[in-house]
Amino acid sequence: MPTFTETDLVIGISLGFNSGALEQVSLSDTHPKYGTNWNAWSEEEELLRAKQIGGWLASTGFAPGTYSWGTIWAGYDAKGGFGHAVVRYAA
Figure 1 (cartoon, rainbow, N blue to C red):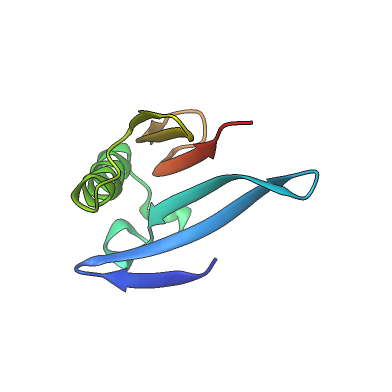
Figure 2: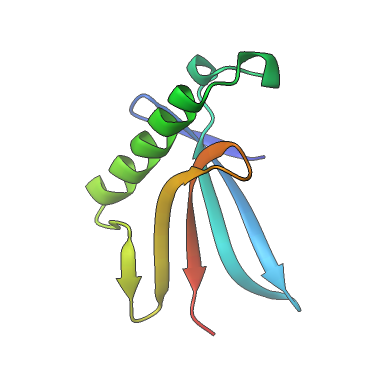
């Protein structure tokens, strides 16, 4: 996963395509302070990770919400067990 550093976040980016068209961008704070494997996993750390990436998005002018071009969601995915953000583009 490609990453870049922004303040104290290490932001990982993954792209989701559907039939060759970009449909979504997933963002996560991949800083090692949250652990580097499942042995270090905790829901508390994942909630913090979600809060960090959501706060960063809001500080850059892209607060989670619905826009004319799509949606931004940031939170904890209990089924997947991780905190992240997803930018989904409208069809």
